[in-house]
Image 1 (cartoon, rainbow, N blue to C red):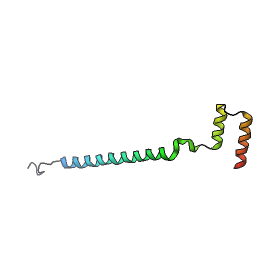
Image 2 (image 1 turned 120 degrees about the horizontal axis):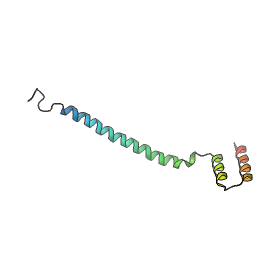
Image 3 (image 1 turned 30 degrees about the horizontal axis):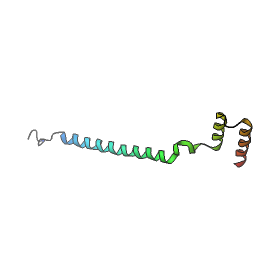
Length: 81
């Protein structure tokens, strides 16, 4: 029995802090994992966030459609709103 600590000293305090840190890291890892999985399932890779006009502009920029078709489809999209 040294200085009245019964052999534990500050080891008990260190173990308590270590346990809190350990569980904090475990919980943070689970939260990050769930958020990551939720984003990949919910958003579909970001393709669903594009509007029809954005997709039309991309097709025109890639050369899939010409200017006449682009203008016609853009007018059609404007009328549908």
